[in-house]
Image (tube, rainbow, N blue to C red; front, side, top):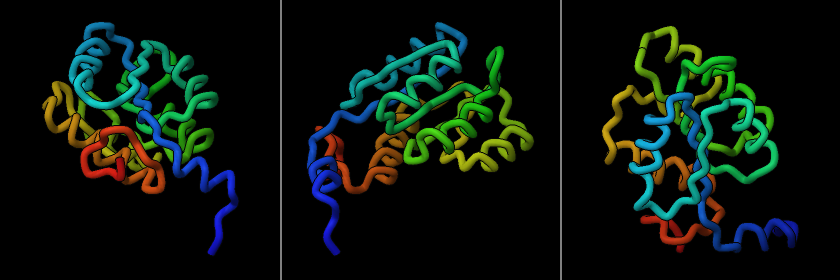
Length: 149
């Protein structure tokens, strides 16, 4: 079956995966960025979930890593918006309170992974790489281990 030429070109483009980090705590946001700094990602970050939503609507975000409890918008509410505006984006929900109710809300929004705080750096890096590959199998990413590039 033949794909539309524009889709074939997009699939063949070599891309840098974009990871969006969202947490209202600046120290946690900085720690997340440090955890991912050695990975071949474009990392953008914000403490404001509404700004994150605007980026999700205007930018090709491959992975969203968000905190659950933030002022103004829960991470699970942000996940709901992701499914509407950026359905191909993989998601990781971070929480210091991994209660069953948080997991239930996350899985209702088709969250890919629930990760407790504090997280294990290597587990987060491995999960990020795996989820990006799984959610964009036809994309060619720069230097993603196990990927086509």
